[in-house]
Image (cartoon, rainbow, N blue to C red; front, side, top):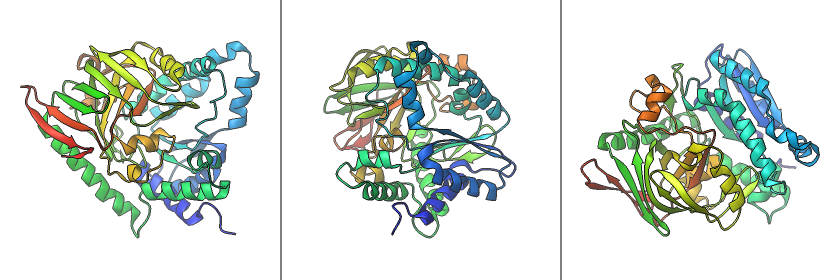
Length: 411
């Protein structure tokens, strides 16, 4: 019987994740997080990591049944707690130059039947506890990477009309395709892809736009760009000197908006899968950089909880450009996972900015980032606003306008 996930392809994905995603260095340790259903990829990555000379690979495994046990049986006070000791240990590991890899593949709807208030409280507690470690990732102090494994629960959601094995096979094939592991030289293919993304960044950085203006159905949004912003995309050199690809797959170029210079209204073009809830039909209005009105046709209560996470949750921390012709968009699939869905369309992110998206960003302290317009928050949540009907103009400091996207494609 043919297995639903091709083991040879899985090994290629593991090799690309370690060599391209992390660019793991000899002697470097690796901290790896994954759901229990992704153990085959965890094991393949461990093999590739040790072949690359890893000092120590430490996996941290989560489990859906254990997570649900908490929501269905724990006392109320449990939902305001987090494993601070664990996150403190992760921060210490990153201080010691440990690389970070996350394997996504959790059931996106795992918490869909649970109390939204408890989900929001647990998420906030985790975000606060994880923040010292997370800041080391958002500031690129270390090389890090996210990649994905086609778990059966995820596959059933993406392909609800297929038997589980066939759904898993189809999801695996989709993940392998958009992760660019086909062909004779996937590492070389990634080098070419990175070069194309870097060329887009170079053009945008040369333009020095003051803002981007998005127009389309339900959208008339001006996103001011942070003072001294820089566009990034594809491979990025971390502060430890290691060049990594944080996301596999990736199709975006992105930068930091000015947290106080966003005006207008925007409508999401794809649903947002967030902590077990599918939020659909998001529409928001910004004034002075802050969301002052927000609604959704489904999951609005969860959206409102997200926006109330802290002061920075109603402001933007990222704006990203992705052509409608990207492989993920052209697959026609809704992956119910931000790692994939954000690479199908232009998107914005609520919350924390990336301090690396500034000229000389590696030298800026948090106060300087804030002074230049960077946002701070315990959350960073991407949602999609691009489509084949979206136009984008770059607005210069003198008010001049330059076409950037037309009908969802680079102009």
